[in-house]
Image (cartoon, rainbow, N blue to C red; front, side):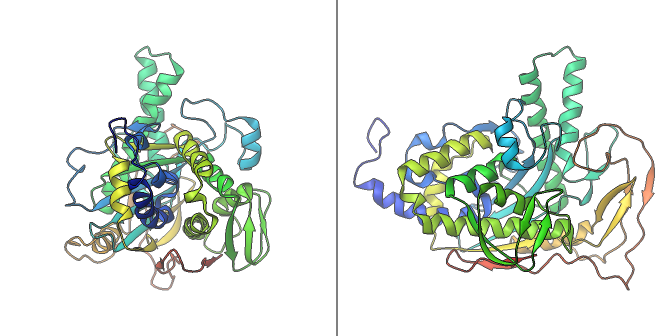
Length: 422
């Protein structure tokens, strides 16, 4: 690289090929976080992203070269400054107007990339898992998806009470608090440090699929969810445009295992995106890559001090790592304070995640019933900061009732076939 930061003409192609090999694999787990970045092998790769200081300093470099990345898909219809998305975009999202959705982290994926780059493991976290939360007035438990929005609302109210009136500043400060809250909540649930973070907006999934010209998916059964997500598809393998792809990853109504099936949809989408990137030639087309990077800068927030140039260069040297998707287990469904929630075994989750990430799982403990104390917000996709108090004890799972099916691990290489899902 010369003094101006421009790649040398001979070094550029070699570096590109290295980056592409690993970049495609990682795209199957972190979507557009670094999509299209492989060609841009200069310091300018790190420019253009909104950054958030949400990683605990003690976790930033504690894994000896391994990486644990929390990727969240934020279900908001607003941009990073809190402005409503244009109506034309909302119409394509088929997700209601800007008053719907609040700030729920409806997609949560914890990705482990080992130092040797041989086998990437990604855990999808069901959004309705009922978990302990801290630092949110009026709540000690909530659905995990709400840890972001509830904290954001609480911090914004505190700032308003202190006299802050700038709506953009309130939005930025509130979102940073929400990001820190979701990182802390997932860390406490899984028992592993998190040293990288990426937030993708609802529009980000649409923009990625749009730049790619759609994605291929495979359904075991036909679906008709026209009332909610807009997903109306026949069974079998098919190509979806960007709007349809978003409906595909958002559908939960009418599926055998609801949100658990939706996590499998998201995993299949990521695999399809990776394969589409490889087949389409997008990663070697400067114009299309620029479109991907423009979308990434518009739709993605990254943790502070995440050097993407080093990350992509290192990943590119990997020899086509496999990617294994898992979904955290759920004991059963329940209703607490009029909310549909997932009852989980936190100890079992910690052991499973730590074992999969090559860490000491800790002492074994028998699974028990879950005792939940607190006041989750109202059910549905809108956020509420009302706290009604109360204590609810969830009974132990009956041995006669099978737990919801989280599905087995999905292990794929980029040359594999697209998995069929419900």
